[in-house]
Amino acid sequence: MPDDLQLPKAYDSTVVEDAIYSAWTKSGYFTPENLPNLDKRKESYCISLPPPNVTGTLHTGHAVMLAIQDTMIRYARMSGKRALWVPGTDHAAIATNSKVEKILMKEEGKTRHDLGREKFLKRVHDFANKSHDIIVNQMKKMGVSIDWTREAYTIDEKRNFAVRTAFKRMYDDGLIYQGHRVVNWCPRCHSTLADDEVEYKEENGKLYWIKYGPFVLATSRPETKLGDTAVAVHPSDERYKEMVGKKFMIPGVLGEFEITVVADYSVDIEFGTGAVKVTPAHSFVDNEIAQRHGIGMKQIIDEDGRMMKNCGKYAGMTTLEGREAIVTDMEKMGFIDHVEENYKHNLSVCYRCGTTIEPIPSKQWFINVGKEFTFNQSKHNPIKGINDGQTVTLKMLMKHVVENGQIDILPGRITKVYLNWVENLRDWCISRQIWFGHQIPVWYRGEEIYVGVDAPKGEDWEQDPDTLDTWFSSGLWTFSILGWPDMNSEDLKIYHPNSVMETGYDILQLWVTRMILMSTYFLGEIPFKKVYFHGLVRDEQGRKMSKSLENAVDPLDAIKEYGADALRLAMMIGQTPGTDTKLTDDKIASYRNFTNKLWNISRFVFMSVDQVRSIDQIPEPKTLADKWILARYAQVVAR
Image (cartoon, rainbow, N blue to C red; front, side, top):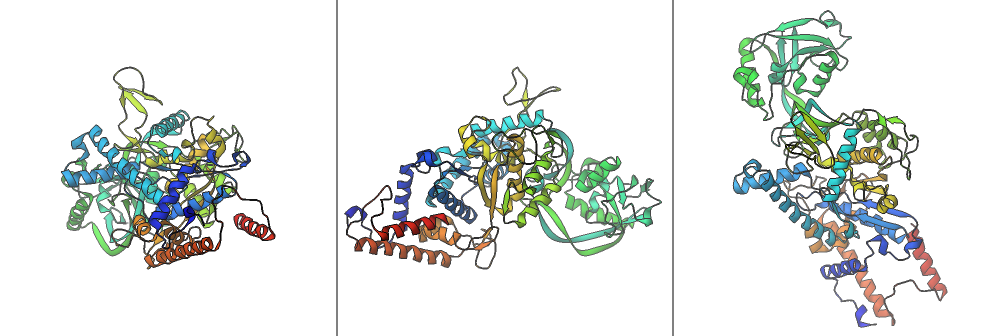
């Protein structure tokens, strides 16, 4: 046996895996143009890597994603397809912005405002660059066969141009508008949040039954009584039929105020007394009721989550402080009928910092998902069932491509979740009051407004200080990484729609839906043919892995201890769509033992055969045994 093919007796994964990955990258085969027999690879296959956030390092969720996608792309490549796997990272706007803010406060006792926008952004970019380098190193340690020559970043120059182009086009079509509406507001982040960025946690609180003029009303937020402008009842509720349409003066802790009684089908007759107070400025449901009935709004909570000047002696208090003070005064004035203890309800919190969300009215930028526009069908991959020039809405397109099976979702049960989400989709608030991100391409000069891909010419123009929701740029991912907005891009023609989008089911609403919205609108085609959702990675007890529970498995530590192959096998064996998997050190160790057995088998073969040599192509079979071996090999590949 030649010396260059001798295998050491002991299998050392750290040495072997690094050497193999180095050989792979030198071969250039991760780039499809370098694959052998390229002219015979007629069918393309593409995966866009869900870009990890540059907020830190990769966790086990990323590891299982990489293992699954690497298996998919290697199989496609082995099957003779022109296979492309595009890598990238996500700037993660609000998450990265918040991370650096916390570091700045902890280490220097400063806020971003102390530094100013330019210096703060330099800190953020430095942090993001370091995180990026760590992430790329982790991915290479995982052995991913990804095309590094096409690496992208959601806020690099090409993606920024794509974002500005997208904003301008949607604005010109009337799909992007600026409006004063009730939004999800985080007092800690001082920014709006999309509906899907709001998390809910069950809380045991109190339900206050309040004497409200001729009514007794139940509410968990008595402090918002200061902003009430109406009382709503169900149209079929006979108890209040004579009151509908009338105005009443209601005694309150700051004196009397006027409300109008309206009949609305959104009211739950079974809740409380069947009559609910309406606070249009601080509730999405109440705001919709007010709009349907032409009722005005009164804002009483500001962007800091504090009671405003119009709240009299309660001004400046936090909402919780205001609640306590107002309830005390209500009790003194005899306005409390009774209090229900241990009332379970869902509390809305920011998905990044956990702060309680305050719905408040604010002037923001939105995407109108229900506005009609003229559909431009793709010439290469047309959407079935919708004609070029047809009048459609974004919601209609999003629903159509999944309902008609043009996008196949695995597991199938998530299809219903998706369609239900689209059915209830509201206009998407896309502006954020943070500094890190794609700055909104809108400029102002006095009463003038300019929306464009490039800055306007002339003096005294000031750009909108807000940035775009990070999911706006992420929504363009499947085609912005392939050359869009250049519709003549070869990559775009060859690799879009992507073959599959493999990701975690926890970002269905946040990301997968946005990609479908963006691709059907801008390209007139689906972004991908299949969506494969993997489950969460849990510990031996079935708990979600987290730093607080100290049960998280660091992929790099696992690779150092057991090897990347062992970790990948532990992730892949038993993997089914949408099902959570358990990962333990024992499980990874068992597959380390399996890789050792494969190594020993290889050593035995090499030692037992006189002539072992490297080959760059499969030789012609000379014996019946050769033919049988190659036939079995072909069967395995065909699976």
